[in-house]
Length: 346
Image 1 (cartoon, rainbow, N blue to C red):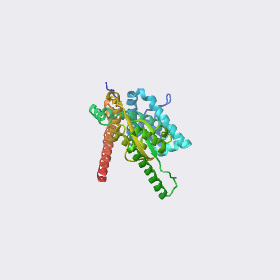
Image 2: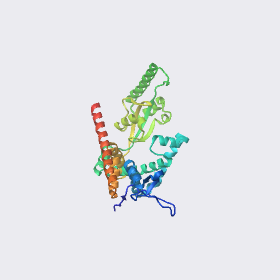
Image 3: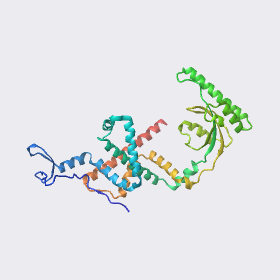
């Protein structure tokens, strides 16, 4: 069942001492400040000024916090831990200057205020991620499983790195790289002639490889899948998935670590769609958020609608509509500029 949230914008609550009379203006408005010569500032004056300048963002934070703390009641400890860890990291970096840094780089005047914003940000991100997952269809999940999901493959490698110091002259670096490539090519040529490539590869790994952690066991990297080895080995990983079991690479593979020769030894059957659905949905949701950055706005907008948000104050209600329209227009403009730039580059 949808929840009803009715916000009257920011209510200024006047707290007075026991029996103390609250000063009023001639029109009957309660005063919050009294100056000499009978000059007063009313609660309405304060409210209208706040409403005009910064009340909307404070109001939205209050609304989102009420909604999200109910929706993610089981995640509040995680959100607090995230906020705490963020402050701890900043404290390690800034030390006693943390408050000054927060005041300089953000709109917050206290450490606690910034910490509260990190807490809310964590909950808001959960909502955006969940909304993005809801946009993923069963058809998309099945297609991703069919086209992108593969079984683990067993890979061994031989790594040859140029023997050169960081401060070496460019000519020396070039010479060292050429020598390393020549060794890698020598390995490839020997593997081409081998009748038993797996045995030959193990022997050559012990003889040539400069990866001290794997050379003695034939250069074994174990079973890997797409993304297992990270960006450092991306070229190696891509090349491995192009091979068949028992095949060796016939071209030198270059990574930031040096030059590689690889052999693919085995392939496992990929896991079932049922077991992988959640992880696939998460992957596709991340892609959705990247392609549709405006989801940061629409996800929270839709969540507020689900809770029947009704901003009673007409001025703030109008501000909210313009605020949402403005944010979406910014994302649309940014997306159009990015598409135009990419088109020109092509």
